Image (cartoon, rainbow, N blue to C red):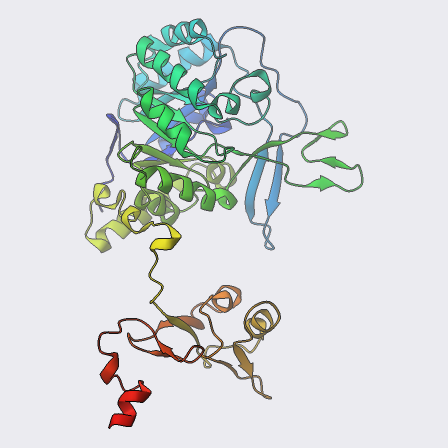
Length: 432
């Protein structure tokens, strides 16, 4: 099996799969179960400073979005940072790290945006032997209303300032956790880099309301007849996370800044995609909460097998897709594909025809006996038919050769160099 040993900003772990700061990493019992299952590291659930106690709701804390098969697609939570005493958390962190020397253990932190608060909590955690700290500038609920979490992460000047304090008062590597609740992820990432962050992690949860109770007319989760916005996570946020990770990885001012990728990682393939888009490792939460800690074993074996089949090392995968992540105007407008239907695989459901006829370009024909075919002259290669077809690979997009004549425009596409002698060129045919 491929060697998955990871060295992320000097923090070593046997594999790149870490548990994100969340309910699964709230105490020693959970963390040790995670390590026994095979997780390479954990980010301990966010610690706060001494002060007014953290009081969580005693009613439901989660809202959910499911697929048609009841598969969990997204989870909305209104849980706050740890409500356990700081000294208890620190004692357990120290015990866990001493027992699991080969695993990564990072402490998530969130305190008011004042220098003394950060100085004090960094001093308190110094002797835990933890491998690093993660600054929680992302939580969008509960703590943001107190001037912490995403309230800091939405102001680049605050990110830079606090990061500088942390680097001044701590020996530990510093990861800045970014909020997606911004217009652009780049200014916060740039601020973290200016402040001296060793890495960034993203994305934190998205401010959201998943659904509304239509009998009680309250958002979920409902507490005594009322609801509040929460943080959205799970498979549904993966596309947003991949884009933001890629933006940081490719931008000139943030290129080279190590990234810990978070957001909907459920399978080894999800993890591989984050790594290819520039993440040095990945953090997981919702998948573990849905399927249990042992899901990491599938991730480990799947990623190992993939790397073996590709003949790649783990580091070879990191950032592999970034050069191909370009702006729209840099796409090749001379590249042409057309949909093609495998009539042998087709189950004649008609979904492709209905979608194209009603909402797209009327590029699919249906015969009286329900045989479907593509009209090249109308097909714009949007691939909607591929996405709605219930049979995998029944409809595929086929590249047209360079110099192919586009029936819609009557003009050649692709490489025009040999067009004068191309058989599709009417002028060349007439000359013959």
